[in-house]
Amino acid sequence: MGDFEGAKKRMHEDLPTSSAAQGPHRTGSPGLHIRPATRADLDQVIALDEEVTNIAKPDYWRSLLDRRPGPEQFFLVATEAGASAARILGFMLGEIRAWEFGSEPCGWVYTLSVREDARLHGIGQALFDAMSDEFRKAGVSKVRTMVGRDSRLHMLFFRALGMMAGPYIELEKEL
Image 1: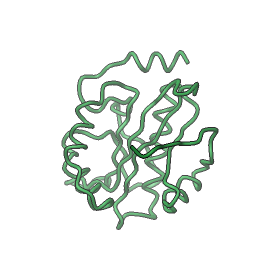
Image 2 (image 1 turned 60 degrees about the vertical axis):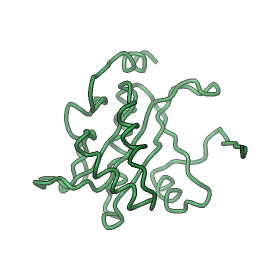
Image 3 (image 1 turned 120 degrees about the horizontal axis):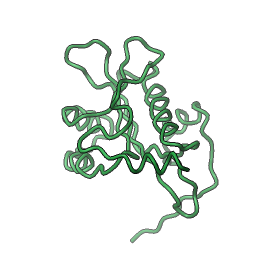
Image 4 (image 1 turned 180 degrees about the vertical axis):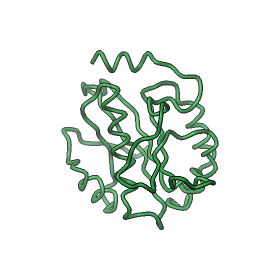
């Protein structure tokens, strides 16, 4: 846990906040570049999110970038390598959470999106691998996510990466 505490103490003033800021992640695809998101990526992230979810949430994305307080949060984008105008093909957000209901510190993936015309080319896996690297560097050894029961695409994707049901059950109540 010492590595986790050390990672929490590192502070950066602007994006990116992760150790990935020191350089891009290597991927298995020579045409793919994984890097930390910057404020300049925001318009493309907003457009991609709306394209995939059919819900426009520009204020959500702007506030998300504004409230990213520390190095335990990661926002990665995948772009075409070598492209003069880097088109974002996908993005992933994650963070390290600790001691929720007794859980040891672990990485959480809470957003993944890949352009529909760019799917099945390893972009999601490259983003997941890069996010996993960030979590490992921060000293955690487990990654979690949550998927909707009816989200077959996400379930198949995360299962193919070796993820399986964990020890917790999500509960909710209509208010």
